[in-house]
Length: 139
Ligand SMILES: [Zn+2]
Image (cartoon, rainbow, N blue to C red; front, side, top):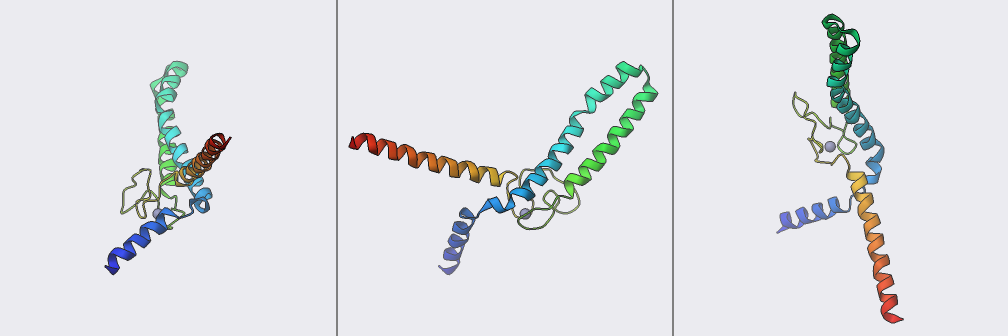
């Protein structure tokens, strides 16, 4: 019974957790992820552009090497990002980085701060709608 009770308390605590205190840490993580994603996305356009402009495989190979270095650096940069809640590496548990949207240690979502903000706004809007409805009913 006690275990059940404490688990319930823990869940309640998590539900009421204030994610806004993680906002700066999470936005830093999002920026690193975004940079990594952009570097991956520019691969095809940059190779295509290089072939178009230089018309040379050798020159394009240099572009490829630069891109590869950028991918490596941005991957390390993203993987080194720490979770603002538990302090562990957000994307690494063990040896290989996994770029999921939740912390691999505590499960904090990458947009937990934004999601909570949206829910708060929705709750305020719902109470306003309720107020307007009750006013209309009264008058
Ligand atoms: Zn965490």
